[in-house]
Length: 238
Image 1 (tube, rainbow, N blue to C red):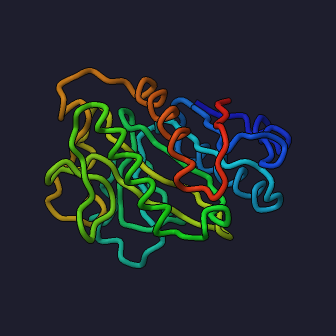
Image 2: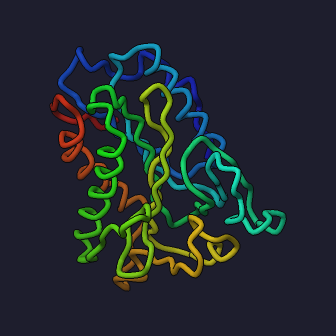
């Protein structure tokens, strides 16, 4: 799926002082990584030039792709030449990961100047959001000391990697909902050896689609954004 970037022109984004909305939620469907990155960069540039524009969370599903953060240590790629899908190095933290069908991808584009300029608080907010979301499926998820992401016992169910430009965030989280997890076996996910990846489907035995999970995440994120932002108001879904 390709997104027409002109649809994300500046006047399509609500302004914080024009309305009570605290966040814009957008479901983009399935799309390739390059298009999704272009959408993120366009919104980040708009918000950098106009601080009154509302924060946005993009929810989507990717075509198969591998990514890694801006790090000189790329051992988690295991060389990289064997990878069966495209590979991108991007401006986030962390080691290699895989995105593909069956994952709910969340890209919050948030101005941290309205969130006490606290990156640690922002990361903990994403983790708490995912943990609460998984509780809706009766999955007891948690953080693990010294590691990013969200876990079910020793199994990793969600990865987190963010980038920040001029206090505006991009990238975000990847939650394994359903589908094939075998592409993770081509890398060392997040640089953690012998990590077991899991999903909502594997943990519950229930059929859950990414679009259905996105609807649930839209509602929860809209309710919880007030825990992050300094000023709170009602969410807007476009």
